[in-house]
Length: 129
Image 1 (cartoon, rainbow, N blue to C red):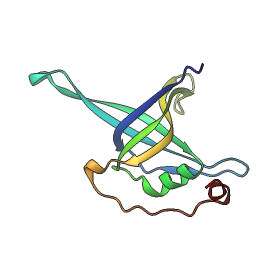
Image 2 (image 1 turned 180 degrees about the vertical axis):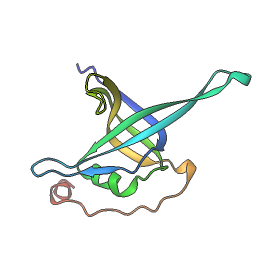
Image 3 (image 1 turned 180 degrees about the horizontal axis):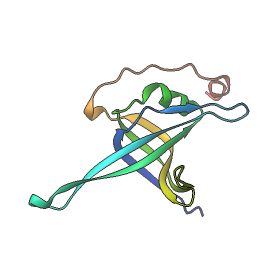
Image 4 (image 1 turned 135 degrees about the horizontal axis):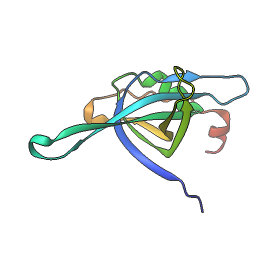
């Protein structure tokens, strides 16, 4: 039994998706996603924003890098993880980042429209159909 946490998050891209391609490795992309909820009630109601780093791999990474720009409303589904790293300014300080290793990313159509463009199937994928 795997004890993994899968989540779905709706929010806005905080920056353009960045594609990383290294020889011998699958391409991956990442972008920051902010999701704001409202806490409290009445006059004390205030927005609280949670930030996540979204990581994608393979063809999904390529599609994200050409489709996700700062401000894009997106829906993300994937495995929630945390990563700890040392800050560049002070290596004695460490930070923890909430990361979603996404297996699905889509534009939230309640906030706008998109034009879909299908990519050609890779040879291995087309052989399966």
